[in-house]
Structures are given as structure tokens and as C-alpha cells.
Image (cartoon, rainbow, N blue to C red; front, side, top):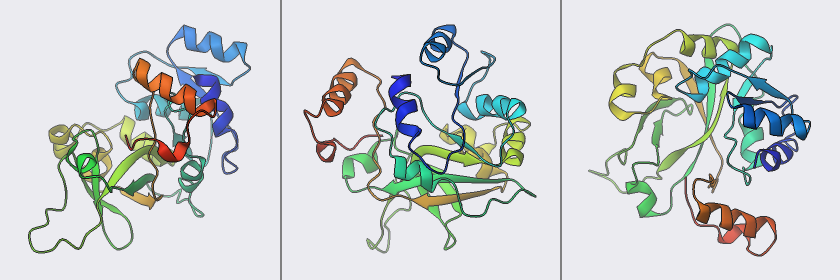
Length: 224
């Protein structure tokens, strides 16, 4: 799994270096076996952003991209889109990939994080509930968060040295931390970006079939 994700992400031309961050010796051993750069971290991190902050203390970079290690079909277009043309360094700044929701079941699924934003694509709020509510108009496209997030160092430092805010605590969405505290989280739309994390044997079977060419990615069910 890690090898597949790493090999796919290596094709993203906007990334200069790629590392696997883990607290599991088994994953570390696999990375070393396949010559995949790996950083061992503490086993006390509650979120991926906390783990990435530890990595940022060891490896200097202009921008850090947080990716999941269980998505061998990760959208490389989305990975590249996470890196903006200009990266502010004087203040906290982050990016977050979002994509359109076309299936009503996705809209009602609380595991899909819905997002709203201003005219400059800055995040205003995230919720497990459908937002905004279509009270006076149905003329609206719903969007959901995709788990590809970018941070400058100041943003990661802020996260590591802050506590969950009001709405992060209510919604159970750790990315809400930045909105709770008024930090800039720029949302970047990638149309029809529907990733698949391998959480079950059925997911694994499906991904293997796609990789072997037995199924087309275009027929992939829309999932988070």
C-alpha cells in the first residue's frame, strides 16, 4: 500500500521531496525495504497535522502537503493543485482541496465534510451537515473537503501550539481549528475528485481490480 501511494505521488511535479511519517516500526521497515524516505515520529499525535508539525521541525520546506497513506488511487492533479503559485511566509497560511458533490447521499453523509467559502475561496465554515441550507434558493453547488491539505510552517506551528476551538469541538473536524482562530485557509476546487481510502477488505479488492486494469476508474463509486 505505502509503495503504491509513494510511487503515484512521485509523479506530482510540484513536490520536491516526499516522506512517509509514521510511528509504526512495521511501516518504517517496509519503507526502508523499498528505499522510501521515512521519518519516525512520536506515537502521541492525535491528528495528522500534529505529526506533520513534528516532521516540519526536522525537515525544512517552503510548504508542506498532508496526504493519506491508504489512498493508492490518489488524484495527482489534486496534489499539484494544493501548492499555490505564491506561498505567504509572513503569516499563517494553508490550502485545502475541495470537490463538487453531485450525489444526494454524499450530501447527507456526515463523514463528508461540507464547506462554504467567500468570493476569494477562503474557507468560512465546515460542517458534517449540509450547508448552506436551501431556504430561499436551490441555485447552489455543494462542495466537500478532500483530505489533501497544505500548510506553511507558521500554520503548522500555530496548530501545534493551539487548542481546539469552539466549532472544531462541536463538529469534530480538526481542520476547523484554522477557521475558529481566523487563519487563512484557501480552498482549491478540483472537479470530481473522489478518492478512495482502503479501510476494508472490500476496498482493497476494488483497488486491486482497478490497478490490474479489470475496472475503469471512471466507474469508481463516489466515496470520501
